Image 1 (cartoon, one colour):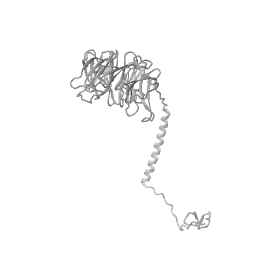
Image 2 (tube, one colour):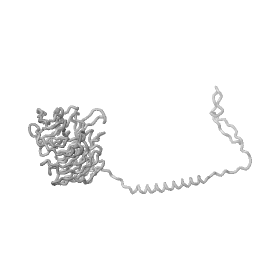
Image 3 (spheres, one colour):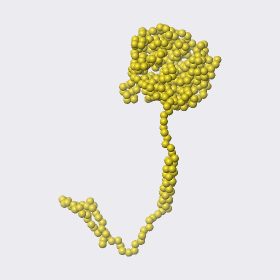
Image 4 (cartoon, one colour):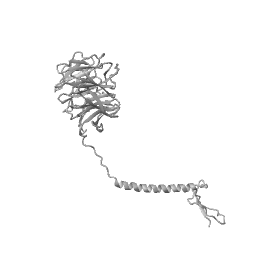
Length: 429
């Protein structure tokens, strides 16, 4: 019987037009093969083929062995439990504000002994940082935008536990809060710790007085042409510096009433010898520093601020520079100031080339030490202080301080990349 093949209706013989095509296949005979002897064809196997087969078998063997080893190892692996430390380590710590500049701010907490990172606390944009006088709270004041880079804003005060790094509470304040570089005069607490002073700018300047216990604004104090708020040593009052060369003191009542501004005589010349906004409280007095290297001691305990001692200390073309450019060690009455050479108009933000030590009793320079480009410094308390500085590239530097008739600094540790845009430093020791 002849073998047959099958060709469907969709092949080269379509159905006739106008007729219903049959669903039966068309069967056609297939020609017989020629009669005669037939040879069985052997498969063609080349040397390359044999080599490929060998490699395949070898690969399969390796995979089988490896798989069995992996399974054996997995049986020995113990599951790892991830946890968060309840609090930072015992000992000394450094709190470094990284303002971020291109995004949210953060406070990095580092071990003061080896500069290792132990944790961080978050904040919004352009954050300020403030450690309470007893060291039991860290406050941030920053702005949160609803769409992160745009939209309605909330100005938020956050209180953190500096040991557990946990957020204790937060509350909103006036959205006039200044979005500015972190600085000591932009966020402060009153002498009794019951009120917070927040710098506003719209750009019109004012100080927002906040009831800390209630977490609510008490009163907004207009401070036209003035900047920063340094609290008085008693009561609810503060002093601010103004563009006309004066300092003005404001006193606020618990009910939110505000006294008439008490304006000082002219204390500095904003055109020829402006002063840095950063001030320190030393022996009850406010101490400011001018661009040309003079210390201005101001008594704000009376009705109005009064200039006391003026102490020139810069020589030979050297001048102060930086952001948080001063740090005071109370036990030795030593003031540390960041300095740069070849001072000129506009160099007041230059990184430090040296750090000078000034005896605040005599006003004399008692030490000059090499710096590492710092822009912010602080100093620890105690009989064996350490000076902590951070440079404009985010590198952290720790110096051991040698006290005496001559004061010197010796770098004892450093850490690159501790922050992206560092602005403030605090210690808990």
